[in-house]
Each structure stands twice: as C-alpha cells, then as structure tokens.
Length: 332
Image (cartoon, rainbow, N blue to C red; front, side, top):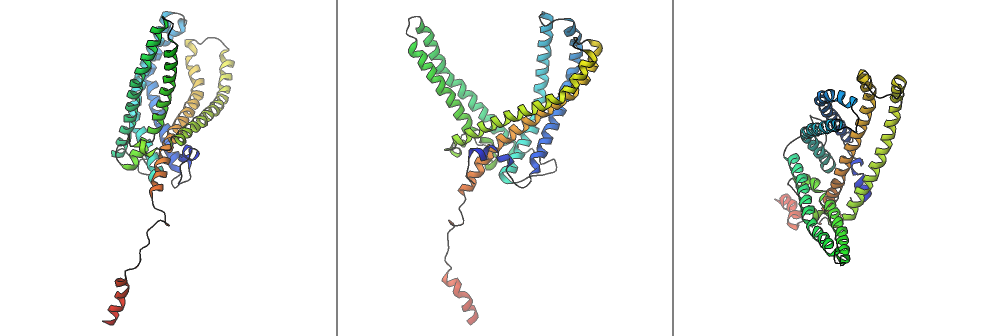
C-alpha cells in the first residue's frame, strides 16, 4: 500500500473488517463524555444557584458581577480538569483500540474492544513525550528570537534597527516552519509505538522521512473537512433550536430573565444544548480518529513496503539427493 495525503486523511474510514468498531468506539466516547459532563454540571449546580440571584440583580459593568463570573469560571475549570483526568484512561483506551483495529486488524472485545494494559500505557507515554519535546523545543528556540527583538529595540534608538528587524522576521518565519515540521514528523509516534510494542519518539523521524508533505497535507485536508462538518452540524443544531427559541419568546417575550422563570428557561434550553453538545463531541471524536488514522496509514504502508513481494521471493532448486531418495527407498 502506497502512502498518500488523501489516503492517510481518510484512512480511518477505509473499508476493512470490523467496520462497526469506529461506530462503537464513537458511541462509547460520546456516552462517557456526556456522563462526565453531567457530573460536572451536577457539582456546579450549587455554585450556580448561589450566584444566580446576584447575577440577575447586578449588571455586567459592576465589580460584583465580574467577581461572581470569575469565581464561577475558576470553579468550572477546576472541576473540568478533574473530569478530564477521569476521562484520560478511557480516551487512551479508545485511541489505542482505533490503532489496534487499523494497524493489526483486531477489533471487538468484552468491554467494547477497550483495554488498558502495556500498549495503552506506551501510547500514553509516547504522546506525553512528544508534547514535552515540542514544548522544550519551542521554549529554547524562542531564545534567539527574543535576543534579536531585544537588539532591534536597543538599536532603534540609534536608527540602526533595520537589520535586526529583518533578521527577527526571517528567524520568526524559520521558527514557525520548524515547529510545524517537527510537529508533523513527530505526529505518527503513537502509531509507531503501538506497532513496534515499545515507546518510539525520535525514531518517528526515520519512518516519516520523505513523507513530510504527505503528512502535512493530510492534516490540512482533515482540518478543512472537519471545519465544514462542524459548520454543517452547527447549522443543523441551530435549526433544531429555533422552535424552542420561539416557544421561549412566545412565553416570556424578550424580557430579561428572572428567578421566577429560571426553571422554564433551563427546560427550554436543555434540548438544544444537549443536541449541540453531542454534535460537538461527535466532531471531536472524529477529529481524534482521523488523526490516529494518519499515523496508522504511515506505519501500515511502511510495513507492507518492507515485505518482499511474491516475485521477489527466492526460488530454491530441489536438492538432487532428496529427489533421488524415494527411488533409493524403492530399490531397498
């Protein structure tokens, strides 16, 4: 199988055995995320109920209103972070299950094909390692840019800053290109880690050698596909929400919300919010699945290219002694 940008971009949708795996894992992803989101809102409910009267009595220009919003935002972020930690093992299990299905053709299982063992831990460590490498790479590569900008600011006073400004712009372009190059070349690390059964980070550069533009355009193609999908699903979600908005306007007009009608507001908004949330989670899952497919396509194509074809298989001549053996046995 040859590697190409369009094939890699849609590799997760390629026809293969166990096609229901993609759908099953997607359902698990959305359901678990919805359960955790419900838990987040359940924990947030007391804080919202406590802050709501103050928010309704004050205006956005007041300090008290802004303090309440900031407090709610900080609380929501803390609870959301805790929820993400609970979801991490599920996410890694789903991501590795997708790789297992695309690379080795294995699917199904007692728990919807989910496992959490050494392969999952290796994939997780490879993801963290890639993030750490990119973080420190960006951090250290910013030092020369900071020095150039500083020199340009100093030389500006003497009127000789032109050269340093040009050098800063040139380095900034090279820096951005280098970050994109490294990110694309390291992206298949989880897939390579799963295929080889050991953590692979810098080894990805050897595997992705000569395939930078294929990988880059695969991710660009996915970006535009997901963007179009998000806009389309958002438009459909808004259409579904219009009847509920109409009911709300018919019941309450355009007046400002008050505590007496909070329950009705929440009930009317529940269905549209639920639809929009599920839509967003579906797009989120497809984004991760398509991203995993790019790395899987690369390692599968490399693996198949390394296998000798039938025409290349060595042809062995029969041993004369072995050919004569049956006659010898017959004579005896």
